[in-house]
Amino acid sequence: MATTQLRNFVNGEWRVSAAQEYLDVVNPATADVLARVPLSPAAEVDEAARLAAAAQQSWARVPAEDRIQYLFKLKVLLEDNLDELARTITMECGKTMDESRAEMRRAIENVEVACGIPTMMQGHILEDIASGIDEFMVRQPVGVTAIIAPFNFPGMIAFWFFPYAIACGNTCVIKPSERVPMTLAKVVALIEQTGLPKGVINLVNGAKETVDAILDHPAIRAISFVGSTAVARYIYSRGAANGKRVQAQGGAKNPIIVLPDADVEMSTKIAADSFFGCAGQRCLAGSVAVTVGSARDIFTEAIADAAATRVTGYGLDGGVQMGPVITPQSKSRIEGLIQKGIDEGASVLVDGRNPRITGYERGNFVRPTVLQNVAPTSEIARTEIFGPVLSLIHIDTIDEAIRFVNQNNYGNMACLFTSSGANARKFRNEAQAGNIGINIGVAAPMAFFPFSGWKDSFFGTLHAQSHHAVEFFTQTKIVIERWPQEWSRQF
Ligand code: NAD
Image 1 (cartoon, rainbow, N blue to C red):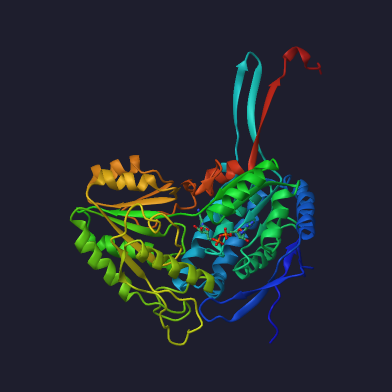
Image 2 (tube, rainbow, N blue to C red):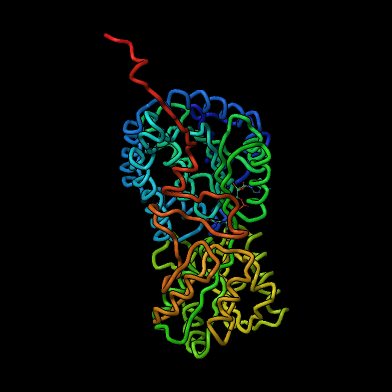
């Protein structure tokens, strides 16, 4: 059977790209080629952006209450197709079906929150700012917006942005990750079924050349990016140099601190999902566990057991708790970093390198790995691994642990396990990260809260989701009015 060639969706039509080059979309567990994705040239971005700009003129005039009706329809379609979408995520990205379903639930949550736009988008007014003069602020859409997504949440991440963007009266060009473009193609096919006016949502597949065309296109006014720090920094600089508003979320290296007063059994269970869930390919994955004082021995033993017993395999198979990593290159990079940790003096407590997963010998599997005696200043303690690899660090006091957290270049998430309210309070006040978990291993904000990190994990001002998204996707306009009675024509 011929491999499906993915198409772009521009101005309400599925179009075959004129790309010179297509990439294989490969199932990371089986190495089967699932589809081929075009690396769309700049001309196709140009066409999508121009048509999106034309569509935006009339879309902005559709009442907010009518705009959100499409989102209500989309929510129902997403619910009805949840398993099919989850299956696609598992096939192209590798996570387990439960993880894929949870991802889509988080996506749907954003649709639900964006349905509140008629309230969230309101401005404000003050009468009589001076005698007989009123002043008010309204929010208007910014125009055409673009979303550039990473591989690790093929469905959810675009939802941090587009429901808010379109509900606010913008149109949108989405560029999925070229490694996992199938899920968003299915999402866009569902959006098409809602009857959304043509040109409001557009999908252009591709990689760097396509992204550069987005960054440089004069009609695109705002860019939402999620991916690695190096690319986030580039997107932020080039987008800003072209006068666009940009929100660019980058990588992470998330520490989890375990105090001696924590319920270690419960903490280990929760933290294990943070370290090894989604094969460590979450921007909110714990990557370093810092045990304080006497927490060390008991936590080390429990987490080693959790790592060694986690069932690794193909996410579509029942009972599997962890899937593969995304590419063979990713696998060798992760295994290289494990070796680097060993070379720096760490010892391997659980070694997940080069596992044999029966039936899936061609998959990119790395089993959960635990390194102990990792030096806080070593490279492995500071580098984003983005795989199921945990570094154990031991520190004597909570103050030193917080110092370690704050020396991190990244600032996406930091978590503390404790039974002390005072320690929890100290930590949440002092830890420098955008998301703090207290007895939580993956501190992912619900859609009704903004989401982003600090430091090298984020470039920009306004975060994803919720009110921040509404602010990002609107520009404020101030109106000052005077209507003197004596100027009124008599009738
Ligand atoms: P990536 O940076 O390689 O790619 C992200 C997007 O940028 C893709 O659409 C890709 O096509 C494009 N891109 C890649 N290289 C580019 C270049 N040189 N110029 C222009 N565009 C380019 O990231 P990834 O590997 O797909 O995703 C994993 C990374 O994303 C990890 O670092 C992870 O921490 C991060 N991430 C962060 C968050 C967050 O909320 N902070 C969420 C998810 C993932």
